[in-house]
Image 1 (cartoon, rainbow over the protein chains, first blue to last red):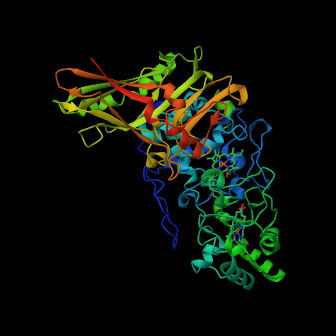
Image 2: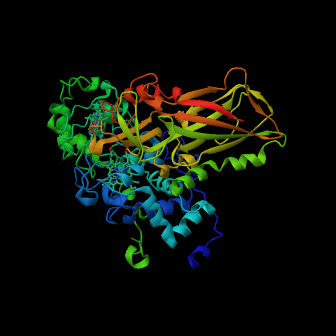
Image 3: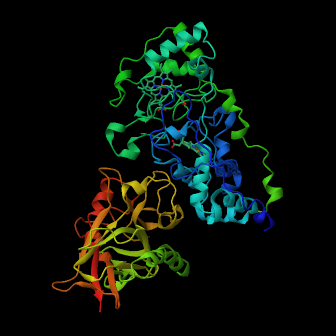
Length: 338
Length: 244
């Protein structure tokens, strides 16, 4: 109990979400009812990296969302959960989430704060139930201290846990890639990159809109129905017009987020462009009208476009220690938790 | 049982806060909820009931949200804290303060309004810990009935009716309007506590407007047409009585 008195008087230090220069303001203020603070962020980060949140103590959020790979599961089409389970979708990059109103590939999640409920309780992800997560947190003096510092005397609650996680995930902003530096006039593009950028604006930015590289809409870009019979958005809307529509993914750090698409079915960026050139299933009724005629592009143009996509790699984000696990104490030695 | 009871009481406690701020001259209204099937108070698990289609069933869980309570004749909702989770396995009492007078009836929302469905992590009755939030398709389950039935073709002969949906086209939140009989009224005075009982008769659940056969619908787990069909029976479930 000693630790409860330590730092007890600290007031949470408010933080402001920095909106990068030239970016739109988020449609809704994610932190309107969840004051972003240093203590809340740190608590969220600890939770994000803590495998004890899962049923068997082996899977944390970060197991599937790895910072060095833009917070996807590196080099995995699907991710491993507890009990040798596999997800049925590719783990998306966690980035610029404060600009996103509906999360997951099909938009099933209506608020970033409630998103963790899905992986925490899914039998093929973290396999836990909330009551048990709460018990584990409550037994840990470090969590008791951190919840208190972040949320005052309210103690450990599911609401606090979810809000803290949203403070961490909502703060993951990537806005310092070569592309951003070029836009700010700090660096020039090479000739290849310039040509690739022009091609991108001509063919891709209708859906992958700058600067987030998504317009957050749900569209069908012509992939086949996969072996899980995943119909995407239709599952949520019950509307057949939404069949095979998935969220347009933001392309930041796309160089590292392979394999691609909602099911990880395309391995490389070259193959992605080949898909748009000649793989699109044009027979699908819900295919986006802008892709009916596929996208024609020479091999040389394909290379240029890939060079441009590489400019979205933001190493200051991928290596930012603020978003990394930091010096996590070995869980088992410190605390005695189930 | 005792755990469920405790949970139900904790959820309903916040109205004591309101008691403190209410005007001194207000009268007190106490609403309690009762739940019956086949004319008997519901006994969980052990008692077998029969619906209008002759299907036998046992009840494991019966929980639902109500909120936005209003009395007819007063414009505003009378309580600031809008949602209560009623758990038929516990005691459910809501205490309200309101100006003295004679009221014809009471109304409430069965369900959760759309804004509260997308406002992130919440506490109290709306805490995700209450197991009334769909984790894989955000939104609250408004009404949950679980049980077993020999007519069910689902795994373990389950009945799993999780009815909810807040988006336009799928919204199943229903305003339930209840009146007292004939010429009588609900009289609130600052001299005594007025007691009302809202009774849920589960017999109506299966056939009040739309037929809900367990053989056809053992499971309803998401918003949509099916949930709407089932919610059409909601209003007929409830009756209002003044406790003399």
